[in-house]
Image 1 (cartoon, rainbow, N blue to C red):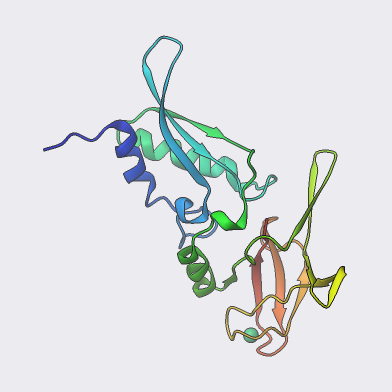
Image 2 (cartoon, protein in one colour):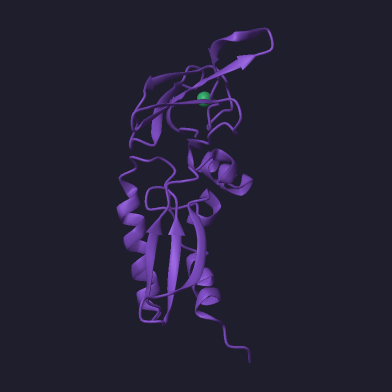
Length: 186
Ligand SMILES: [Zn+2]
């Protein structure tokens, strides 16, 4: 029998760790879990290090995620530290297709995939414009339609830029009239 290294063991455990706010998707599927590695501590011993990147820099769930990771490792006798890495910043491209499908099934509209968002940085604040330049309107901005996760209609409207959490916006479908969360893209 092959003995798993602490790093492999940690990957296996963390593989099933879900997001505290969205219990149907794992941190790995969301692209939050970046790396598990072994680093040399100051005393020369090997130390387990788990790297996570928040989907949204102000996301209050990050403290919870750090605790979840630490507690899970501790439960299995693995001692490590959790490093929150802000650069490179999380992007929608890190989210697996599987995660997007699960979000939709859970009633949350998944973020539009990358490339067509503008990230502006003002001071320490990143502002994402939820807009795209289209071929017919190259200089202008038009809002991207967010499809309703219930009925698939594009006939939706943003009712609040901050939904149940800062990472999500609240939308309402104008066809089935259901409100839903939209996972904001980055
Ligand atoms: Zn709908």
